[in-house]
Each structure stands twice: as C-alpha cells, then as structure tokens.
Image (cartoon, rainbow over all chains, first blue to last red; front, side, top):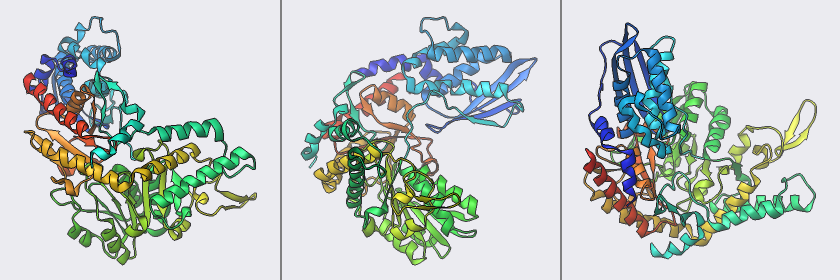
Length: 163
Length: 412
C-alpha cells in the first residue's frame, strides 16, 4: 500500500512533537507577539517570545493546525530557545533552504527540526511546515514587535475558487 | 442506476492515470471537474480551424467563431431554461458574476438603512461582495440562520427578510454541507417585500436540472469549469429588465455601439455587458459541456450522485470517530460530503488519501463563517460527479480506514 510513503512524512519524532508539543500555550507577558494565518487551510498560529540579554529566554505557541505545522512549531521553539535573534534568523533561513534544497546537506543546525526535510517530498505540505518559522521571522523583523498579523502566501497550493 | 453511467467514465482521459502508484480516484469535483474528450476536442478544433474575434469581422472565420460563440449562449439559455438568450451574460466565473451583481446592480437599488440578506453557509464569493456593498452604501448585512443539521432555517428566513430587504443572495446548493436551499420559497419571500433574489448556482447547475424561471431568480450565477467546461468561463443570468438597469462594469471592445469624442452608446444585451474580447474558446467549450450533460440527462446525473451518496454515507457513518457535516441522510443532499476524523487534521487525512490515489479537498472551502458555525478550523471534503463509481466509493472508504489505522498506529 502506498501509505508506506507516509512514514517519510510522519516520522515518530514528528508525531511525538505534534501530540505533545513543547512550549505550547501563552506567556504571561511577551516582548514579541504575532499571529500568522495560512489562508488556504484556515490554520492559525500565535507565537509569543521574550528576549533577555539579546537571547530568546521564553517562547510559546498556540493555535490550530495539522500534525506537520504543530510539530514544526514545537521543534522550532526548542531549537531557537536561548539563541540570539541573529542566530534564530540564520536558522529560519536554513529551514527555508531545507524545504527546497539538497536532501543530503547537513541540517543539524536545526536540531530536531532537521527531520522535517521529508516534507520536501510533499510539496502541498511545505507551507504547513514553514508557518511557525515565517511567524518567528515576521515577529523578529517587525517594528513594534507585537500585534503583527499576517498571512503565509508562498508555496502556493490548490485553493478552490468559486469561478 | 449507478452502473448506467459508468460507461461515460471512459470519455475522461485524465481519469485513466496512476497517482502515487494507485489508480486515480478523483473526488474533488466541487472544486473543479474533469473534462470529457468532447470538450477537449471542441477547444482544439476551435483553435485549429475557427479561431477569430467575434462580432467584428466579415470574413469567414469571424463568422464561424461568432456563430459558435452565440450558439453556446443559446445552449446555456436552454440548459437553465432562461426566457431569452440575451439574459445569458458570459463572465469568467461565478465570482465575477456575483461581484458584478453586487458591485454594479447593487448600488442602483440599495441605500443606507436597507438590508442585504445572505446565510452563514455562503462561499466567500457570495459573502464578501455583499459585505463590500453594505459598507459602501450604509446598508446592513443580515444572515439567515441554519438548522442544527445545516439546512437553511425557513423560520429565520421569514424573520430576517422584511420591508427593508433589498437583496437576498443564497447558494442554490452548499459547497460544504451538501444541502439544497429552497430558492423558490425564499424568492417568493423577498419578492413580496419588493426585493431581488440573487442565486449562487456554482454547486447546483452541474448537478441538477435548473430552471431559473421556475425558481423566479432575478440573477443566477455559475461557473463552466465545475460542469465539465473550461476554466475562465462562467455565466451571469439575469432577468432582462434588471440586466438593463445594470451599468456595464467594463467599457470598450465588444460592448460598443457608437463612440464620439465626448459620448458613446452601447450595444444591446447581452453584448452591452461583455466588454473586451470575450473568452470565445471558453464559451464554445462550455457549449460542448452543456451538450455532453444534456446527452446524459441532468436527472440521470442527479440520480447517479444520489446513489453514490446513499452508498457512501452509511459506510462513512460506520467509521468510529468520523463526523459528517450537514444532513445525515442522502435524501437531503447533493454529492458533496464534508467530514473530519477525530484527532486528525484534515490536511493530514488528505495527504494520506492522496498517497492512496484518492483526491479530496481539505481546508475551509472558502467558507470561513461556516467553519466558525461548525466550530472547526477546516474539514476534509469528498465530492462526486457523473464519472465516479461504486468502486470509487469503496476505495475512498477503505483509504480513510487505512489512514485512520496509520495515524493510530503512530502515536495518536
């Protein structure tokens, strides 16, 4: 059965992160807050973080999403904890590269999230994996650091239009 | 009845393919339908032999193209039982048709303090244009409630539709719940108040015999690509008197009668509303699709889909943890079934079905207010058409069970 291919997408560690997400919930106070939507599927992700001494000292995500988006968010919060914004931006860029790049490269900078390279074989799901990372990027580069909202529009996938 | 239509499946070359090592089972027909060879051939023939611009040439090809373009209009007129071919305006699709009514006809009849009435089940294309019209005119946008099973609440309709109601716009058939709305009844309510009935027929015209005069719809919109035709072609039907009142959205090209330095006059309907060079090939392709559907018979197509849903519903209902949205019996439904599995996001489910060759939609179906009403972020959706078979239903149900087992054996 062709479902065996699904193992490449839904590795055990991905399912574990999705079922028991790390840093899931809300912070009491946050320096950065963002809500990012995936308009094609209605998924929504809220990300909050606190910077201390130029390091991400607290981070939390919440919202609604599929296995891939939830696991990716969970892995990302692990990976960027205690990193500087510049280090986090480098990881975001690395993650984006991984979604379109060479499978045999060394993605260890991304820690657990490196396992999401299997998503590359499922183009319709790349946007699910990148949602949290795009949210972090938008939060870090925003001027007012909060109340930023946006939509993830790249990696176009089929959307029904009533035409 | 199911088996009677199975021969038609052969007419759809795209369906004879392997996807992810499995034979394709295409169940995303509410999004777009596949094209029979007859429609594909018509497009090829048009471009190979007849291509010319319409209504502006005396040469032979121009005459041929014009004749075929207008013949397509007449086919559509008969197909939806319109009184006049001038009441059939070619657009690029349902979204454009509805936007034209809201954006161009709307301001001629709606004023501040008036009410525009729609329902919670509407596709964004039959919702946002009315939001815009309400915002621009100072009118109020009001919603007819749904019954718990997703059917339109007629008591609510009687309460909401009142003396201030200028326009009611409803889906003829829902793209999520699979319900068919009682347009004729609602049209009588709004007409009694002196208002206008607009219908989003995108999910109805491909699947049942539609008679715009019997429904007493003032405007009726639908798309070609959801009824075996090409993308980029659709229809706005309107009663002639109301289309006459509607200012053209686009000026120039085919719609022109006479142009002076300061003033211009425009052609009669339907051309007055078809500015620019129209989608000639699209219209002719839609004409071929109408011929194909006519040859099968809309009653047969509706019965076929009804049989597939009658077969699918109990099989789906027997799957533990599977929720079907909308009425739970086939009798009240079209061939659209939206559903979710407990503890599994529809995107994950759709990927698992895709790996088994089964194409379904997952998402909000351009109906975010309905998703809020259903209290879900998204759903999976299977939608049948005339070329789907009992075997497709079996494969679909088996694939859901396999997906469920896969994720249960994971960690869920």
